[in-house]
Image (cartoon, rainbow, N blue to C red; front, side, top):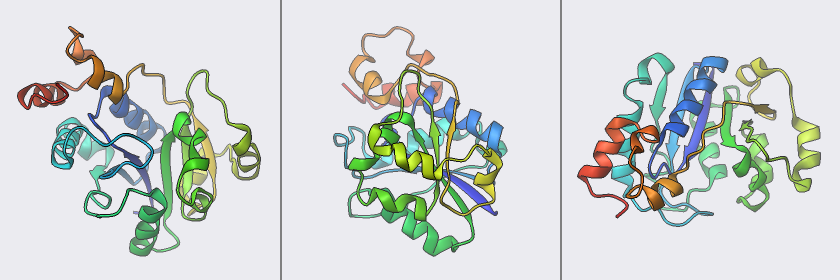
Amino acid sequence: MNNMVIYGGTFDPVHNGHIKTALNVQNHFHFDEFIFLPCKIPVLKKQAFATPAQRIEMLELALEPFAKENHFKIDLTEINRETPSYMVDSLHLFRKKFGKKKAITLLMGQDSFNQLPSWHKWSELLSLANILVIQRAGLSNTPELKNWVQKYQTFDSSALKSQAQGLLYFYDAGTYKVSSSWIRQHHLEVNNLEDYLPASVLNFVQQNKLYL
């Protein structure tokens, strides 16, 4: 296992946009390991509504049909940590575990990328990993990140699997008009929620009366 990609998030709940993005990324890049990293204590978002255990179970249900073929795994590094879910701390732990030579890539959406300057020790991220940004229609890089993009951007997607850290790559994995917050706010009003949630996750949400 020479390379890995890390997909962090609250996953409250995990939805079809998460899954389709992950599948499209893996179908293109073929990372040796695709790690889902649920956070315990969100820093820039509101506190999670579902418990960590419920969010983990929903992730397991959603990923089960695809896990083996796509090397999907769930990592509980942030769930098991008592401190807030700072990505820079998690990447330090991954580096301590896997060493300096393993190619590690952090996957995030364009909206999260634009918020990087508000992240804890954000300027250290590329010293610990590469960053793969999922482009979003209508969103562009903020002026604060312009120099960062010019300095670190690569147009060679294969480099993410061979270089340990320090690269920035933009990729179009498709557009999915759904978000966890939208589902939490509107799931009682929507008749066809199966269009937005895996069937197993929808069943779990309904059985456990989540997001009421």
